[in-house]
Length: 174
Length: 174
Image (cartoon, each protein chain N blue to C red):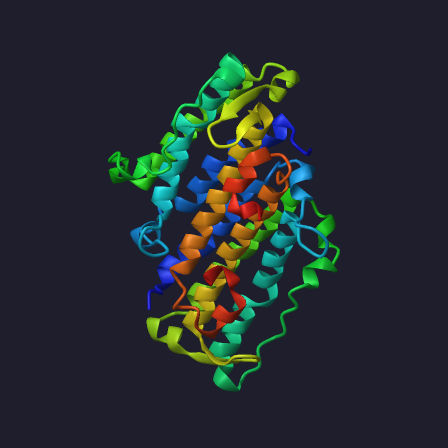
């Protein structure tokens, strides 16, 4: 096991700032580009990260630490963000919302994991069965990085037809 | 064709700041993680981006605009950065180097492409034959995004063994 709480928090803390560095002030052409029908553009990915920070990671961790394996995880709708009207907010506003929410969630994470041994506490995942607090926190960090990579890929694909023969060297476009 | 010079520059301008938001001050465990033998860690990817900004994009564009199809592209060694001793500089120093170099290269790009029609100028790629200035600039932006996605993936894989059963939902770890 590699996991260490402070290192996981390094990633969680950086994600909103990094995404703001990339997306704030970016042209609509970039922000609205997606990979085709039924795929997300960069703003929709950002909305998904916000939704997960609101309803998934910390609420699940609270259930784990308060109710243990007997507790039921609150539901997480991976597509909720597409239907809640938030997409109408500009990207710059959403980037600030994400930063504020994340700072609060990291504070709450620190409160909940007051000592190392709490990382071993278990909850029951609806599909997987028993899962540990440290697995959930590691997944939270990896989820950030997954969607960061996705945003980079979505933007890159906008130039699929513009790179000419270099397409052969750019596996991200395939 | 989607390409528009100002929009390409939006990406080129943001990459060093975005990578600094992610990598500056990050623990050695993250910065040294790679995907296995013969793969790059985040700092090696950064060194590759610096090397390409030094010896690839602008020098090739200069050849295109000054010598046209008759000119030979200067060689680009995709592994040069692994052997030039620079890897000993800390990541924070390299992030500043990259930012300074990129700002200068964007200035030079603006000088070289003084009018829209110059985007159609051609050069001869050693493997592909005729390529256009706008294809090279589009490739430069996509190359940034490719390696941004790579860094996110390399970091994510560090927690491959830590996410427990959630691995099944995280395609980036496969």
